[in-house]
Image (cartoon, rainbow, N blue to C red; front, side):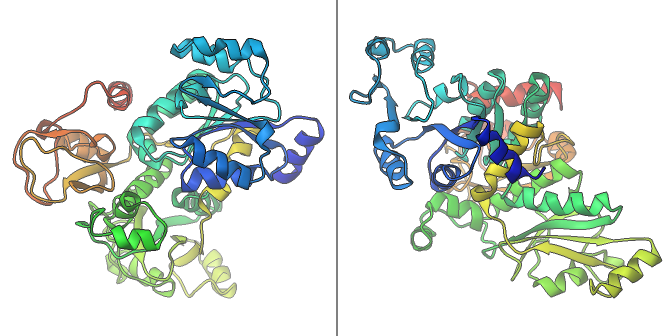
Length: 454
């Protein structure tokens, strides 16, 4: 039975996959609107910074105000048709007390909007938690606690995945739940091509994504302020795209899920249109730029916002058939997907996790690649790194074995680190160069991962 039929069947049985979403930005808001129209699913709770804006958006998306429950720092809002015994629990402000408070509510057909993300993983009626924050620190807390509470985790937080994904996967396997990066982002879309090719015993030469903007490692939220505004984007998010950090993160995610590796630090990132790829991302001996095969990379050109995979085969017969089917002249061939639908595709991962206990893309190879932090400008002692998409550093993909040996700072935990010595522009930042926030949940989870997984 196909996925759509399975979901319809669920609904006909009176069953719905109950979903909690953390983060109601561009991705989270799209999820809230889309899932409301998918059979067999419903959003039961969302955590947001701005309750008022999310309330308005939920009503615009079709949620009835009488079915919306607001749960803020003071507990439940009045006038939401709640029983008095529930409202009396507003006196309890402790973490455990707030969880007990929200778990006394019958959420059937209701939508809880809260500014307390910590309650989402512990809500008894939630089956799947979606992390749509893009913040590694928040994602670490949400994913860890969701897994501990036996919830499946679907994350759009690729930044967190390339920082602490392996240990989250290990915990999820132990808890018999799914930890997965979401369908719809470039790593998952490229993984689909990889699975297709390798299932047919085709040899993967290179796989990756199209990058929308030319690389400018030194861009920052101020230089991109107007451009981001014109695109309706957050300037920090836009900076992570333009300075290349996001592409490094996405391809590290793909690397850790497939075993493919970067050919060089930072990848090549050539400018090449679709028709040129099979002549560029191939071995040097055949006129390309690669020193080895089985790599991840990105390109700028007309492929964006799509993904690609270049493959070959040793079989003369299969090669002849590929030529006959107008897949090119060989020996290298291309398959590509000219789009990715981001969070619009996330429900596919939700359904696969709930129905089949399957992930879409996970770091099954552990750490193959890492994203290391490099100085975006000259830095001095006392400067504070502002992390992904900021003013102080950008990320480069590198083999994990090299980052481990050289002790390069993981980009995912760079935010808030205090610089201890002078660093030159473009200099790789090492752990000894900074003071790390040891109170960070993310940092401590990363330390455990380093000890257990390496």
